[in-house]
Structures are given as C-alpha cells and as structure tokens.
Length: 147
Image (cartoon, rainbow, N blue to C red):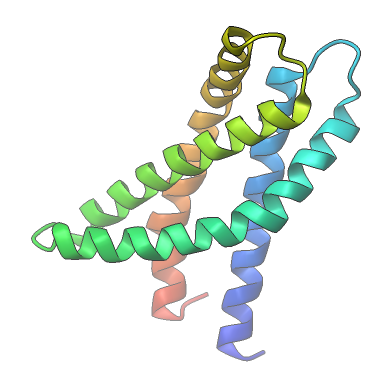
C-alpha cells in the first residue's frame, strides 16, 4: 500500500472516530426526553463529518503555520501541545454551537447558551485528549512515515 494512501486512510479513520465520539457525547448532553438519540446524533455526525472536518483541516494547517511563525523558539513538543489544545477548543466550540442549533430545543438565548456550554463542557475533555493524541502521537508518526 502506498505511504500517502496509508496516511490518508489512517487520518480518515482517526477523524471518523473523533467526530463520532464527540458528537455522541454532545448529543447525549443536549438530548431532550422526546428526542431520539440516533436521529439527532446521525444528523450532527453527518454535518460535522462533511462540513467541519474539511474546515478543521484548513484551520489545522493555518494554525500550524501561525504557531511555527510566532513561536519559532518553542520546542516541537510545546508547539504540538499548543496546537492540540487550540484545535480542540476551536473545533469543540464550533461543534457545540452547530449541534445546539441543529437540535432546536432551546426556548431562549439563555437556554441556548446553557445547552451550548453543557455540551461543550461534557465533550471538551474528550476532545482535548483526542486532539493531544492526534498531535503528539499520530501526527509525528505520520510525518516520520512510521505508520
């Protein structure tokens, strides 16, 4: 199997797992009693996978260039940690907002923000963990050609 195809396949599977798990956590956090989990989760998952993953890839590249430019004196580990944390917070925030909007169960702006922060705080530890694993383990191995 060519190395480039192998890298793309691994990245695709990792992103699939990340999106599925994070949207599931956010869906559970925002689910109202009358809503079915599978329908709400599938809707959020598909939107996130088809729209936010390409957006996240662009944000990742831009963020990587900015960090390398403005933090050039930092070690690779420090840069990767910062990038992982920033990516997790940015993407989780977007996902929480989109999922809250798509669920449509909020009655006021206060209720919207309560649901938004609820889903963000439930999923952020998982998102940070997965993002750090991605930037500290998977990305360096892909860059080295080990995986």
